[in-house]
Length: 95
Image (cartoon, rainbow, N blue to C red; front, side):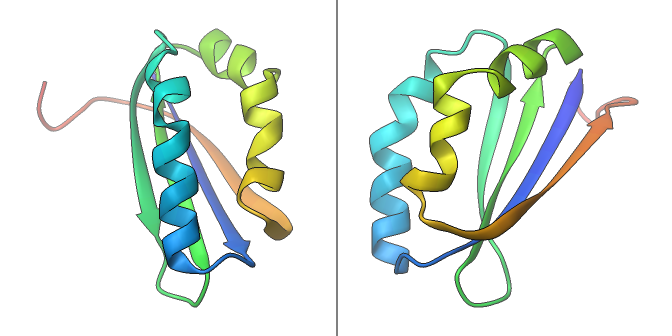
């Protein structure tokens, strides 16, 4: 498995960020190779992110090339460039 950690700043108020996330849930649930996604609120003002668990590097690559992935900055009114980290999962604490 592979982990993708995304952090960004938005110009949207929190209630709108949550509305956008909830509206897009079905699109993310429909991705069979997305094992899990956690929606995150950062410590700073207007800081949010996502923690994705993908089945494989190929699954992540396919997502990154998708319209859904490309729509994230505009959907969330991202300010600046998001911080994206990619990590190989060594093993989970619980299975």
